Image 1: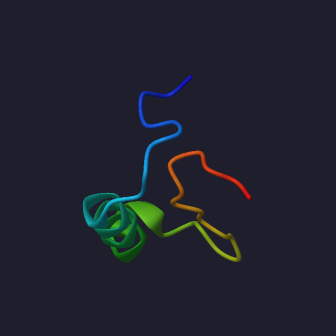
Image 2 (image 1 turned 120 degrees about the vertical axis):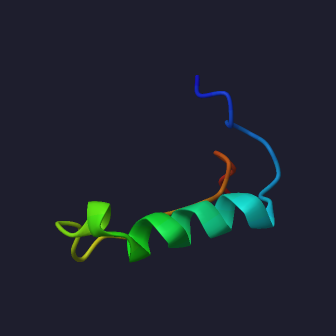
Length: 42
């Protein structure tokens, strides 16, 4: 299990996801849904 599983979401995690998606490394990502939830599901 990833070390971030089942923890409450934090602004830092959201910021990292946004930074990645805005970077050149995410150039080939299209039409995807990135869920930043710490593994929590309703």
